[in-house]
Picture (cartoon, helix red, strand yellow):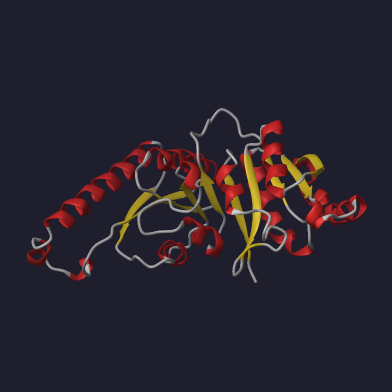
Length: 277
């Protein structure tokens, strides 16, 4: 995680994301990139100074954002972290992922606004699009991060073979953060699997997690979302980790199961690791 992108609207939830991004950057000795999109009615980048005066409201907003980005950079540097700020005027849906790709970003950490969950995290961008299409892990943060300890990472999966590659990244992430891993399969009536079939699938994941593994669970639940939420509550989960497919979004085990409602309502941060093909 050498470069961590933090899309921000400077709100309280964005500050929560920044706090966790800083902690990860400290442990990885990484660099923070603060990113903000400004909606403008013209090609602002190529206007000269005289033309800027025609749009005083835009000029005022651009100056305001620049000050906030500069403050975020200075604050991070005061904590001993290398940091840069970037103001974007690109309103396309893939602007964030394009920035991540062109700047060799290793992880995206972003805030989530209350019940809206990952649908929108700042004007002009859709965080669900980022989660589905990013080629790097995306961490969605909802609440204030408590730095004292790094609790468990819960990896929820169908434990098919394609999940093994993103799980390697989960293990690396857990090792660096000093976190233990829980493996969870939620068995539902609609997608019921015999327990011995699930255990067979889990064997490779258990071996890979090795000393980082703390618990392996197969739970029965009426719905997938209910099972995940209840497990997180009972076990005081720190992070929920899922694997996402680079093209079609949530991997097939989660299509129709791990819905936006689940992601929106679990209280813990959710980190997605992409399956790249």
